[in-house]
Image 1 (cartoon, one colour):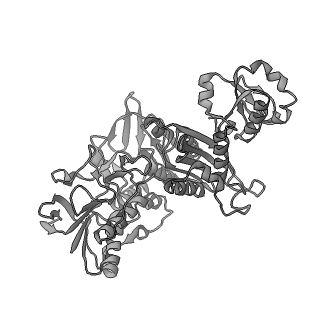
Image 2 (cartoon, rainbow, N blue to C red; image 1 turned 120 degrees about the horizontal axis):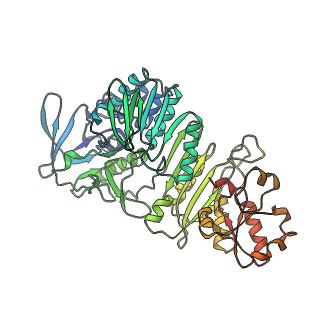
Length: 534
């Protein structure tokens, strides 16, 4: 039997290696368009920033190493240009010939490529392959003032790394915020970090064209211009599936390969994995594209198992991700607010800012956290975290809880490894579970600050005098928590109105709400507190 794999890197290479471990006799062929079959795509920005010093460190496996260990036939600089599923053969183009290759099983992992945003796109630099990073590194080392078009993962990682080698960097993002996986207020925290490190960021950037001469001129739709030594495009990707448009393999309207839960296409014995596919989302079940290395690797392994008769299903991705931005980290899993509103979920939002470890142990710092859960089923729908130490630990915990279909109340019972340098006795996940229990048991009502403004609610600030003097909301009433019982009469005239209580992060506001409710007031807690208001 012969398995032909179109594309290497994450999905293709992992599938090939797993196939060999399961079947010593199978003929396995990888057709790879570039000269690199298995490389650390996610590490490319760090080579630009000289964090990864040697280009060879980007290569996970070479054609030679794959043959030596696994007897896999790797053909680089070869492009599949046509697929005939009736005859079970593909047409392959190299530098000097076009030939056909038959298969028993076909695995498609062609990845994504850039979508042309500008008429002279081919003159501009991109960052998708090792060839791209080599060309970009050679140019950037000779230039000083660099523009990056795109504020997603690659664009932001690239901006950090170019700044790391003491170049001037400007990021242009079309959307109102960078990092679309985060809610805007959390993304703005990351943007502030970039600005603190002298990276310029322009959102709502409407670029009309990019003119290349000795330098590059970016022309905005309003007529203003910006000149740079080099421009890098880190936006506008699409599925690399043009070679499938005349085949019988089903694609969606954007050109992504549609698979079932076994990663099989609509054609028997033809599978697909990675950036060029859509598969059912873990939470919604809707077909979605998730362009991340982790899911691609898992999909490749699942395909190999199914080919070899071991029934495996892919239960979908929740798009768990993390990005380093200088000394900060930003991570997310599952849905954000925009997605929840778009899909019509009835959800509860909790915002809090727990310390990364015990407050009394040196260098504890806040983690900004947002979590969503379904009000009816109590299933966790997503979470975001921005901070320093502990961001990865928290998001991994929530991602595991989502995949195991835990309810938000289950977080209250999680056990985590605790010692003062590593965590608090009540972990951030525990804390979210406690808050959810209070809401469910009708011991607390949370409200978003933006809803308080819309409803023109009375705002009671229960922070200390010192905290209030350092900064407060206009027209808020100030009564420190420890004085609230003695000064409760000052609030009698507001008894017929809703009182939104504010503290630094929400803990003292919860206590204040319990006091107010005992005295007959309608009190709600502004989730996230003053710390979360930007």
